[in-house]
Length: 207
Image (cartoon, rainbow, N blue to C red):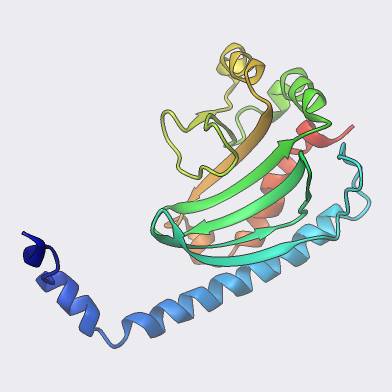
């Protein structure tokens, strides 16, 4: 039984022998990095002069670009801009490209201003609803799967349901998921979608 488990299938053998697989992957990785760098420039421009409800010591100029291999066994690349993780306070907008899954644009909020964010989500609910945004239902900020049980679409008819979820939350994660097959992803428009998404989230985090 043990010997059988390490035998390559025909599909695995073909992949192992494919001399173009890794160069193709490297080319895609480079393109994603370039798109995320463009997203960084675009978001920095968006942040200029923008008034936000933020935790103490928030610096809108801090960002982070990350590449990894093992988000549930799949490669990933992401940009955090703005990026604020300080103690229990979080105010970060993440653009995550998760190979084999989707692009996720997420606002991660926790800490000193969380009560205000929750009030504003409900008080300005219909400004946020119907804009392809979803409220994460996961028990932490670091779950990136979507679908039933993972995220709840923020639609005009779900205010009471969203309010019930918020009552139990000590943090907020609002996400927009975009399929990798979306023409805007294929055409390298991550930056445009990031800015559009960040603007759609303004009612949650502006005074």
